[in-house]
Length: 135
Image (cartoon, rainbow, N blue to C red):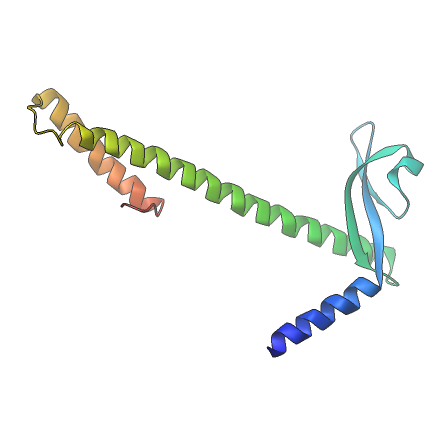
């Protein structure tokens, strides 16, 4: 409860004194931070950041860069989780396909059984390495 109140107060204090800075992208591809809107510099807006007001420009840019890199890390984490979930789905589908050949109790030739057994060992190892749900 105490932490919630402190966080709320910090947010309320932070929103009252915020400056807006823009990450601009010039037509040649170069990027730069600006206090004014990017169109005043003949550039396009790449990102808008809200930083502490009343601090030196270099510190505002540093705050904006930190916020930008923090969001990039979160995005990378979500992307990695999505890729892992997709891979887990592919592995589970392949495992179900192999297991489906043996659930009807019909005879399978050794040329099919041996590679299937090897692949199942590989699938189990990869499922475990990716921390996939096995059920």
